[in-house]
Image 1 (tube, rainbow, N blue to C red):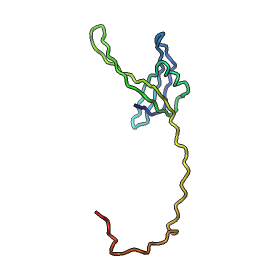
Image 2 (cartoon, rainbow, N blue to C red; image 1 turned 180 degrees about the vertical axis):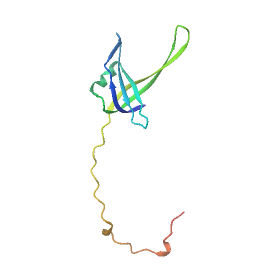
Image 3 (cartoon, helix red, strand yellow; image 1 turned 90 degrees about the horizontal axis):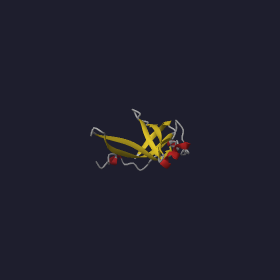
Image 4 (tube, helix red, strand yellow; image 1 turned 120 degrees about the vertical axis):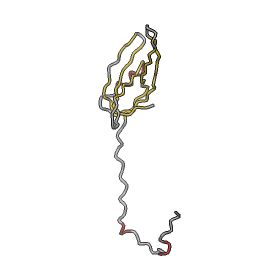
Length: 124
């Protein structure tokens, strides 16, 4: 799956435990109702965010993750997270070379093989 939008927030790396680190990114989608999507990058993927800045348009490849947790009272809860594994800049389309202008209608020779009887020869 992918999320397209502009970077709103790039948080610093967090060392959660001795063996686990994460870095959070917020991407704002470009829709009628923009969404602010929090995406986590973990472990070696944290370094992917080092060269990105607020305001840049990006495409982030993500995986949805879900987990089940049972609290001490025996109640089951479910949690979701969005994990990023690749990020790419969206480059604005470079201006393309314009096609040569179409010749004016006056430069075309008029049709001489018109048959008035075949004026309505559409097949439907």
